[in-house]
Image (cartoon, rainbow, N blue to C red; front, side, top):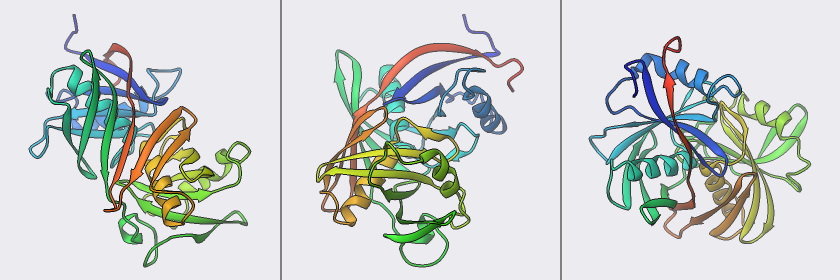
Length: 287
């Protein structure tokens, strides 16, 4: 039995990009505790451990509303792996009974189509919407677009493409992601003064017209095994630069996603969502 100071959670992941998911439709967790709670719960070895905290809320414009807090306590606008996990949770817990779910996010309402087998969600496809290239929409300092522009970091010059797919991304194409020092350049680019709200960084290796390999440095988290929005940003950037086609497989450290950037400029991302376990958190001393 769960007491008044305890709360049920699901531990979930999309390609190893892992989350603590809590149904907060009853408002048990008030606004001021969300950021510090995310920092505490996501701390690996000392708590549950995760890349982020996902929260389910009621919505007046969609089936449900999603909020996501990074491991550092900052709130993110959108998360491609997270939204697949949240959609799976909502279906399997009877919050939404349809295989197409509309989910409100800080980046707008997103539609998720579920692939269901024997009542369990195996995978999901997300309509990620259209990318934004204007610097003010990402944001990046200056005016116009930031496509294949020079980005100087500690004396090194990269060619970078910046865009928003609901959250901000900086995509850099490299020869070999295995040997590239992601841990060194990732945080320096994330916190560059030209990115007022910081930025997610993708280091991308083109394997073929329909295949890329990606390593992701996530804003507020560090390097993660996968990032859905990062995969989408990488495909869009690669297509805009003429390096890849409109449909592409994206190999991340945690597995593979499929991304389509259609002729109308919309992005569709498909991939798995997994439940690891169900648990109970004792809130005593945490909030």
